[in-house]
Structure formats: structure tokens, C-alpha cells
Image (cartoon, rainbow, N blue to C red):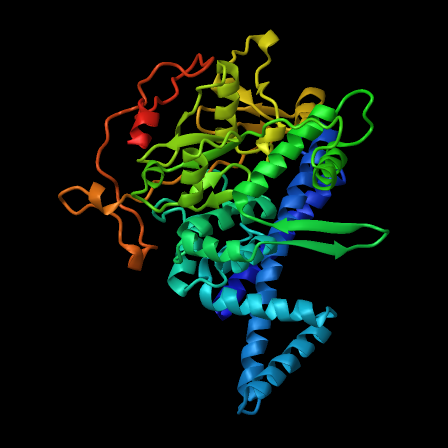
Length: 502
């Protein structure tokens, strides 16, 4: 960030401070519009003030990055040339200690700031620009630093552009990055990184499998952490099964919370196999598989509900072996969006709930990470008020936000077949829900048209994808389960089981 950028940031901060002063006057009851409701205007002024403060904090963080990177550059320039690795380490330690003392923070925090400042100023210009403008927070910028670490500059630039450049090919859809809470942004950034990593997910998974282990970490108050580093499908199935078993134990006479029950069920299974009286239901986990990966002609990752990208070999094994805990989902070869859910053994209402799980992924309230498996379908417009039982009038909020909808003025609106509802607050403000980040699949070479319209090879994995060949319109199918609005897409492979077997 050069001197001009610093000056522009300071000017923007001055304007924000003036706006903040206006918010403070309104919150104190001065300067309210004529005829305004004093209490409502006070609340609006406080919310406006919080938004302005958030922007100021982001710009302050950008200035801190500028000065930290500038100090590191100056300190390196004036220090005596290091003639050994030990000398370079000593220089870095001295600079870190100086910054730690200046900010009154630990040396660990100072080292992290210096490293992140170097990354932002040298390799992530879009992220630094968004931080300067106040459109993302410092936490978002740190997530971007984390998720681009280990990538070469070209790969990091593509990941950054996907989330922060609206004109990038196949830019992220739904909420802008700055409107996602940092934890949800990290999930989306990590998922996209996994799908586009220059190193094959199959190769990385093979290495991970060799590192599987069980760990015991002592904690305070006579407690300890027991964790297992295992394959994603094993972990997802175990988590879903434990959750289902815990839910089955809930009732008026059960005082334990779902979290406590889940831990107790898992402990009982590990110690005694299956404890007496503990149910052992079958888990249900969605596996979204690109059709070419399923056929073995592509190597694009599949998506495991509640986890993220998994190797296509794992998805093929789960589907091909008939694993009862996993329900396969076929995706559109043009857009990557879900096309059809396996329905052989499920009644229509359950299939519709599965479609909602695909559309929303989790509770659709902004920032909520409650996994969709724990949530129940809910009418946006109540049945008693004329709301229909269709995909466009359904959501699946978690228990907390379901209660929020029914006991306060918060209300979900404008759901579609492919997008979860936005939410309107009691103050009348609209907050968008996070959308699934579907993207067009990688087409194998043999599916390319005669004009050479195909994806780049492995050596240019990060090139933007071109449009695949035209496919017939498969959206003109019969209405989906219980759907009264536009129909759900039909399966382009109706003889799917025989097709895969062949």
C-alpha cells in the first residue's frame, strides 16, 4: 500500500468518523427526522453506527498492515547482511520483538502480524484493497492468508479473485465474502481450495490416510479430548450416526443436551460396542458426485455433506459398494448444481427434505453453521396463512432460529428452488443467506467438441473453465416431490444404476 493509498484510506476514515458522529447524535435523540419514531430511530442509528465502526476497524487493520510491512522492510534494509541462517533468524527475532513491544502484544502475535502483512502486501492485492475499503474484516483477510498459504502465486491469485473479483470467471455466487461471518467464509474458501488445488486430491488423500491416528489430549478439571484423524467418509458417517442415536434418546425424561448425548453415545460404542438401551440407527449422508467422476472418466472431487470435497475414488466406493449410510446425488454436467437425488427407498416427503439439504447445506440464517441433518423443514409462509408445501416455500432453520422466526419479527423470504431464503430483521433490514458455491465441472478430454472447446490439462489446472458443449434442456420435467411451483430438474440418466454397472 503506497502513500496515495494510505492518504485515501485516511480520507475514507475521516468521512466515516463524520458519519459516526451523526449516528451518535441520532442515537442521543438529536437530529432525528421530523415525525420519526424516537425509539426506532435510536435503534437504527445504533445499527448504522455499528456498521460504520466495522468499516473503520477494517481500515485501521489495513493501516496496521501497511506500517508493519513497512517496518519489516526498513529493518531488513538497515540490518547488517546475514551470512547464515542463524543470522537471518536473529534479524527476524529482533524485528518481531520490536513490533511486539510497540503494540504491547506477544511475540507470537507480532510474528503472525508481520507474516500476514507480508502476504497481503506482496501477494494478495485484492484482499488488501477490500480491507482498505471496509468491505471485508481483518478476520476475513486472515482467512484468505491461511487458505492461500502453500499455493503458488498464480493459484493464490485465482482463489482470491474467485471471492473478491465479481468479474472473475465463475466468481463466487450468493453473499459477498464480507457478508459471510469469517467462520463460514473459511469453510467456503477451504472447500474451493480443495477442489482447485494444483496437487490432486487423490494424491493428498493417500498421504493423509497414512497419517490416520487416535489421539488423547489431557485437559483441565479431570477432562480430556479423544480425537480420531480418519478418512472423511468414516468421520461423517460416525458423526451422523451418533447424532441420530443421540436424538433418539431425547425426550421429556432426558436431561442431557444433544451435545452431551452425542458424546455419551460415542463413548458407549467405543467402550462396550453398543451400550444397552442405546439405539443404533442408520445414518444418512449425502454424497454429491460429478457424473464424470462417478464414471471414472474425471477426477473432480465429490462433495460430502457436512464436510466438503472428497476424492472421487472415495465417492465411487461409497456409491458402488452400496454403503447404506450414504445417499448419492447426481449433478448437472453444465453448472455443477444438483439434478437428482436417489429415491429408491424413500417416500416423497423425505426426498423433498433431502433436496432442501442440498439447497441450503445448513440452517439458512446468516452466519449459522448448524448442519442441515439436525434441522427440520419449515414453511416460510405458514400453512395456516396460505403457504404451500413446495420447495420455494420451505426452509430448514435450526431449533434456535426456528424459535426466532416464530417468537420474534424475524422472517425468512424469497426462497427459490436453488437458493435459500434471505431474512428480514425486526428493524426492516435484509440479510442474505449463504448460497452453495456450485460450479461447472471439469470435462474430460474425450467430451470436448470438435472446435477444441475443452478444459486445460493438469499442467494448467487453474485456468478458467470454458463453456462445455450444449446439452438439451433437462429442466422440463415433472414437478418435484410436493412442489407446486417450477419443476425440479429430472435425472438425465434415468437408467442410472444399469448405466453405472455397465
